[in-house]
Image (cartoon, rainbow, N blue to C red; front, side, top):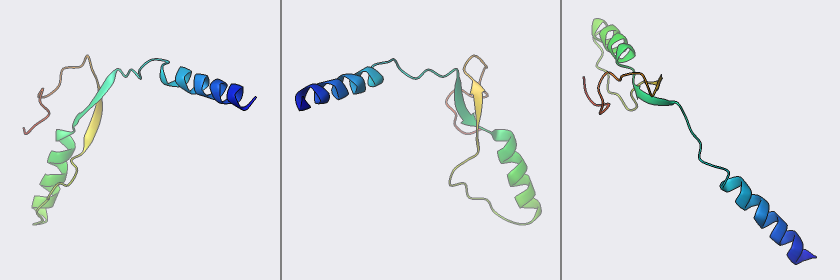
Length: 73
């Protein structure tokens, strides 16, 4: 009985993991507009911004990106 229950649980878990990959129609890119707004406001106050994690935004994959490698402006 215990073996049957273990096999059933294993089959259920395998079914969940093989149900297909997660597909998304979007991706994340650097939100350069927000970066510019924040850095401009900081410069006006005499403050230097050091980014630990730059702002990101979600865009549709079919939408052309501002720069393909998601690097510097």
